[in-house]
Image 1 (cartoon, one colour):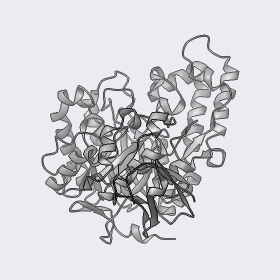
Image 2 (cartoon, one colour):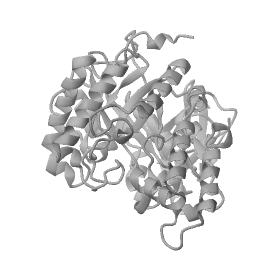
Image 3 (cartoon, rainbow, N blue to C red):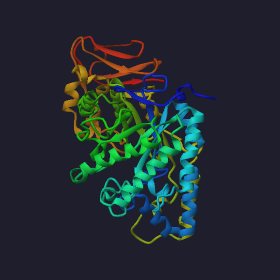
Image 4 (cartoon, one colour):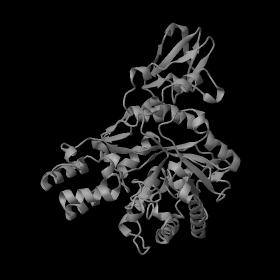
Length: 479
């Protein structure tokens, strides 16, 4: 079956992304983190096992090189399969962001690694079959682009900007990728570097980053004139200051947002750059929080016409992703780096249990996360999520006075009693609107005086209006 939205390339048109027919897009996707670039926190590991090479070294130490190699072969064959893609599409996502590690795709001589590229080929085929776009994301560049442990850099420095060999390999890699996928309209675009130069490194190599972006753009355009190119800002993709003019007419700027107040002020910088440069912007990574926060921040992006991508699709023992793998019995001995190592046979049995639990059918879905993303009940909506800060509505003071801890629930921890008590003060005639995908069967209000409030469906959400002054803490909607 063909999909009409693949009849042409996704591209920039002013400040919007549009499909091949010119229809404006409100992208809603999910990131396939951990598959082609493992990240330690998704395995329940600490900083000493945060990057791919550290995890690989630990597994080889535990079970030996042959079994470790077998583990990684089976992991890459099974962590993301067509069943994952089918489920992602059925839930209503329209694209995936695919992070990958250069080490798995290109060797030191600049030649593509066939087995590594085959994984991307298969994913692109699956996504095309199920109607999903794919955003290709260089998450771990040669030498490392961040100077932290998330990009597979052995030295812990952004050596991509320090050594010409790594720079050349990055240019070669993107040229090869663009040449390989230039005719695939289901490829949404090319995300050149994930979260380059955070912290102090942004000040040391900012000019070199922009020069590399320009050279990567020219290299890609030599072989692919059609696909969208995305550029991420420095400091965890939160700072667009270096973008003073468009690098390519068919491009977009990508930002990431975690653990912030879900209000316009948190994205004002990005909105300003969008208008000044007349380029689309895209929220390429965000999540790791409560359903209440996920609902609120996702509606914020949608109010401002910003496409979003939720991070990540699947990880171990979580309440903050759509899918959660079950924790294998004995996993604590795999995660522990101190003390006596487990017997290799026991360690292998535990790792095999991990592999057996990757399949979609053996994972637990987290409906609260999915419902929050797509504004569907059952769901608890904190009162501050019904506030349109653009209008300086009645909830602006509640957000301004809320404790910072309200946004810092990275593992989805339940709110404390003081956090649950944060209320929006409504005067007579004040109203809050809570956007929902469909009319719920029923709803309840957590308020100082529920009888002082009137709530009704207006065709796209529930509007809560104060008949007299009261405080509203939450609206809970049924399916």
